[in-house]
Length: 75
Image (cartoon, rainbow, N blue to C red; front, top):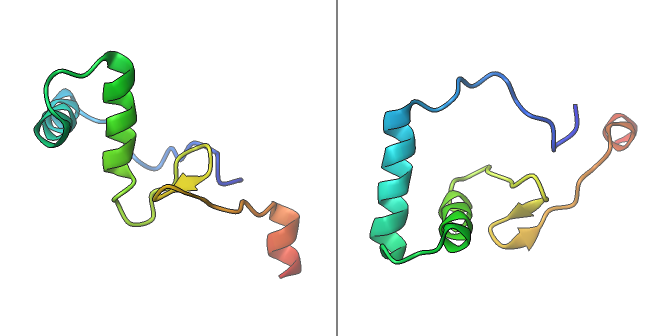
């Protein structure tokens, strides 16, 4: 499994948790956000979670080198 694969070990978020995330974004970044800005700010908020890496390989604003499975077995 590569770093961009979906991890099915976690259940989907309940509607209450989704609302909690939306409230956190609005509290931190304001209520006058476009949908695009809201999505970007939500990703910014999630970057503060230890170990969270976006699917495009960004962690904490820095690109993370993705190693292939063959690189891992050779190391």
